[in-house]
Image (tube, rainbow over all chains, first blue to last red; front, side, top):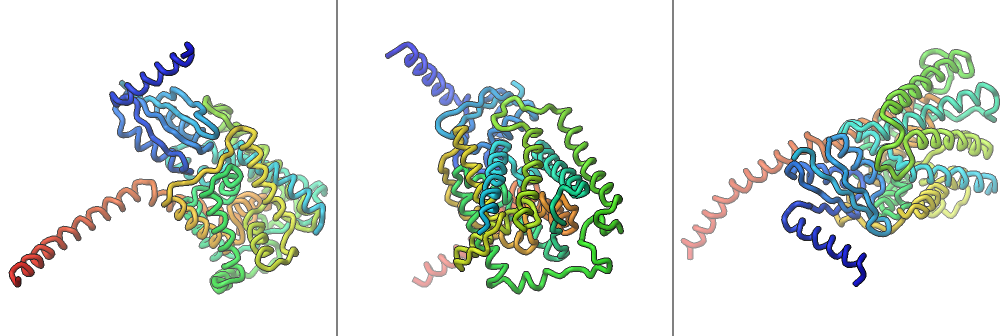
Length: 98
Length: 373
């Protein structure tokens, strides 16, 4: 195993541990278009405790703009907007406070 | 078929689809976001596009550079109002307006494809099928004594081509332009996590493409700009009758739109076939059918009325646009807003009540059965 692979393995493990501990919540809205990616994100964020992290998996380009814009307007932190595969993205949000 | 109509329609359509996809331009989202998440970015984009096209067209007309008298959509108060409202509700269900649905077909959204097919089917059903009586009953025009086309200028007693009419158009267009720029530039042009075009670029580009459509289309004898409802209907009519006479400049612009959106999405790694969850496919089809019904009745959708018709200050287009907004807000409130949540809670209470009422009855019935045994 190369160093890079080992590192990404370790990161994955860490992420899994965090998920188990309930720190990272996942919302999968792949296949959904307007306005569901945003409305589901709003609902999911409302259920989180301050400081908790939500990752949103999506494949709808318009929400890629509106979700971060909405989150920042609400004072949440946009930790990451990244490509996960062909026409698939991941937005990581941290709930404000905490 | 006029070769110029095919070529210029395709070119303008390609540019239109490219800009729609990069700008993520959707009037459905624009009208909804401004109320439900208090974000006016897409509304500003739309306003900017409308203003650029309106100012450009009026200046071209008054300097004599525009080749003909533009067509003004007729005013049918009942059909515009009901059609616009139903279209507005339909686009919320379908997850996109007419232009939004078309560009998402280019991105590979199969739910949007279903909505588009429902849209097209319904335009033909209302225009010459089972629902023609509805269209015939609702499409009446108020009598006009002046013989002027039904525009805002005519309503105010200004005749077409007069200085007063130009001033009115420049005033309206200028105000909308100023509002969009003033509110937009204070917030900045580019958002931090943006992948697509900023609103300023999208708005100006769409306005100029709308203007190019007026010029290109009028040169082929169709004195109108971009539209979607008529072109979708033309393809369905051609498919079922085999008569190529239905196809015109707009038909080719529609093909260009979907192709342009595909090119834009493909170049940026955003094209892929995507399937919505099962229930959502039915919702998209239902939304598409409502959109087709409404747009056909009103004589246009958020593009034919809500973009192009506004450039000639058509009263029918203004009325339809207002009703599209009201329809979209109503459907959004019912589906996603507080009124919808209250309705859902009420439904929950009623069904719980019904269950409680039904339960003792079921028990006594069971006891009776027990006793009779």
